Image (cartoon, rainbow, N blue to C red; front, side, top):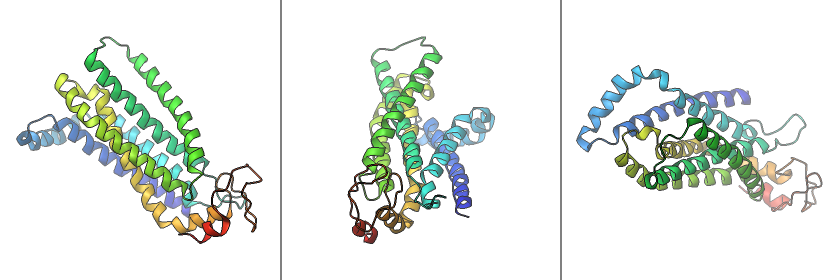
Length: 267
């Protein structure tokens, strides 16, 4: 029953992310107009351009699916907290999903930096496969680094999921704030702003902030239950702690930062 609820959450999140993506595209396309022309441009995009450009919507659907699936993976321990072994479900998949979002935001920063660099020293004729290869390497490398950093830092907190959400939200806000002025400059220098890294960085900053909404709501509702479980079991491997509350997990060696009784009673 809980997994069914998780599936429904992913389906609803996909639908909402698709709507947010379409609204973002409409806003980006309409933004360069003068203020009094914005309503006309919005109507033109909705009723003329979007219906005829439906085959080019695939980035929106891929992005929406990515957001929805990573949200589901992130919330898996919340919907199904106990594994078949009887232990609390490990946060391994939660960290993997959060690292994927952090890797995308990091790549967005690189895209924004390249846009700024090309304003100073334009590069013409760069093969598309080179850009794809660089971005793929950036995604993979940053995912490995973020996975290692988040897995270490998050486990030092009483509520690791909430700590991760705050970090992702802060990173998204910084990305939007840092990219918005650059995107305005890029739009004044080029006619094809949709192919610029600043636009993609700004879009994914909005996507990162949207990603935090669903998990934040569900984590708030299950805060006490998760704190009790994390106090009675190791937050890394799920090994049960004895009533004495050893400071080190005998299974994986993780140092328990919070005492057994304090973690179980807090919330």
